[in-house]
Length: 386
Image (cartoon, rainbow, N blue to C red; front, side):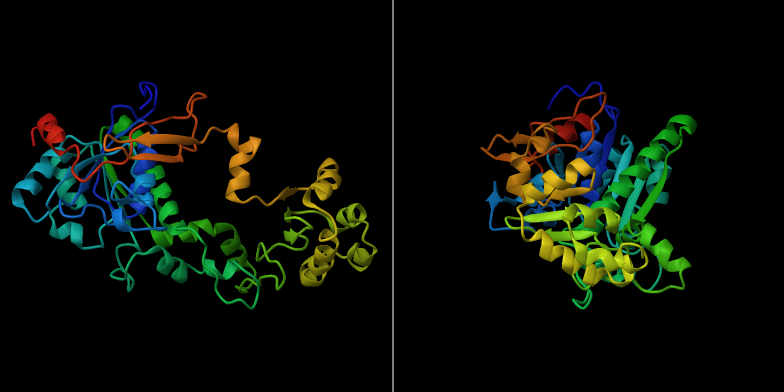
């Protein structure tokens, strides 16, 4: 780990009882800001994401996703069915600043580790709960899994072309956004604690995070007669935005074009066929498929670089669509210095990302890989008198 004496959360202790993605992503963000994160894991198997494989790659007996989201954390093995282990965990929580949990509603109460119980032994604790769908209602006991949360949120009807049916995001966006929302709430509660001396309970869910993600388009929907979004039937990139907004195949790749007035684009592309739409902005939406099909035919005739040479000097919002290899080789990515290698004593070495934040001009960097199950148990028990 780099020197973290100037990181804003240095000295704070986070006890992370969560698993899979949403809670661990939250604690990862706090760790990158300087907090010490102790991950509570079952002795027999640990976090279930250790076996959540995105590919057939396994490193040190664990999945790449586990390594990515749990780097530089410590692991304390706790058997929640063992009274002595539960007593040790409560003793640790008396000394903690933050607790994160994402058990299904009802489970944490049965363990006797709910907010009311834990705050009674540590009133300064900031307690964060992440669920699938909140704490009440008909979906409470449904699995809080990313694809299922996306399915219930309406977000799938914003992706893909009209007629495709619902299209899920190719990322665990509900987990990541819920984790980020929880981290934001935790930081606000810590600021309040600095003023009042008292902790608090931060709650969010996968569904709430996905609703918030859609706040712009949902506000439109709620105030325009509740019409459902209608995606473009051709190269759709946004259900509510007019032509030319989209991604177009060029002779050697793909070109993204954002919000541009049709008359200006028609002149630059030298397209007489767009003349019927020049002075009719409403048609840029009502006829967007026809307009985009004409633009696509024109874009296909030149390379991406040829089009960029024409469009960028005219201040047209456009970009080449990069794959990951092209991104990694680009100077725009390299200058951000967002990759780091983390290591472990058993020859585990992982190239992964770094924090998206820079503090006082410096991006935090860590060298320690994700822990083995209970790797720091003995040290933590001794340190905290467990």
